[in-house]
Length: 105
Image (cartoon, rainbow, N blue to C red):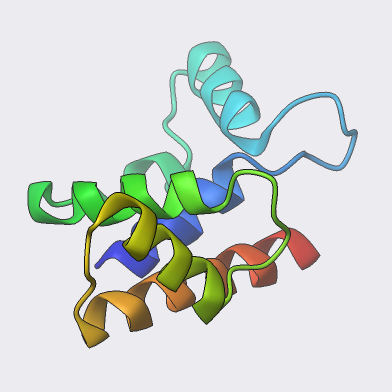
C-alpha cells in the first residue's frame, strides 16, 4: 500500500538522534559494518508500478508546503489536468498524515 511505502520513506529519511545522518544512512552503515541487515531494511516496502504516478504527484504537491490540503490537491489537479479519484485523494491525504506523524517523533 502506498501509505506504508510513504511512512517507511519518511522514517528512513528522518534524522537520527545525533542529527548528522538519516536513519537510512545509519541502517546501511550497520549492515556494511556488521554484515547483518537491520529489520527496517529487511521490511522495506516496495511501491507498486500503478502507484508511482500518485507518489510522484504527492512529491510535486509537497514542494514548499508544510501540510497537504484539499485545496493543494485541487490546484494540482487543475494545473496538470489530472483529475483524481476519491480513493486517490484519500491516499494523498493519508500519505501526508503518515509524514506528519513520522516527522513529529
